[in-house]
Image (cartoon, rainbow, N blue to C red):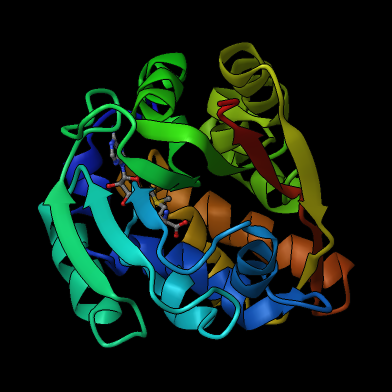
Length: 265
Ligand SMILES: C[S@@+](CC[C@H](N)C(=O)[O-])C[C@H]1O[C@@H](n2cnc3c(N)ncnc32)[C@H](O)[C@@H]1O
């Protein structure tokens, strides 16, 4: 399948495609605590911190976890896509931050001074960066001594039951994000750059009841977004069979993790 780092503008020029994937998570996740509040609770943020949120996307994260992070943060929202930056700033400027700024920026060459942030957050974005080690080195560079980097990504078994359906397109039956930047790679690259890393797994699964949401999610990124009519018909058949086997429900295990490294002073 095409590289996840290719054609970012097509995938993220607006939030429609990302929304199809996010919807399946927000609508069907079975978890004691949702993903965004779970992450927010674990970030060692303090009032007054200057925070870079790189690959911010439309930034539902901050809106979904108000009260789980301290007020008085200075937030810089950065993304390769100007449309994402605009939407994220609009969403976050009404939240209880001390200041919110947006900046179009490539994580491989961050346009920020050395040692200028207390925290860098890179959630579900390093699998899009062609050389994630370079991205992590940039994040290390812009962190102040004592600051931390928080990265989230997927493991190789994430939502396997859904990805098995994409074999109709000739894809591997596993999460392409994890193939590009999965748990092992996150652990190895962050340990290599920072000399320390801790990992936590969000306990969650999906209980999907509407086959159409699976179809929309799997056709929101390559190659499903450009599949032929014949392949789309195969996908619909495979989805229908999976729901039939589960008596109308598709139970899917998730494997999503948070990695934190600290820049030793
Ligand atoms: C899957 S979305 C994640 C959005 C958000 N961080 C979240 O967790 O919901 C990936 C985001 O990374 C951005 N992105 C891709 N490559 C990038 C790069 N090299 N530098 C900065 N952002 C990038 C995309 O434009 C997109 O908004």
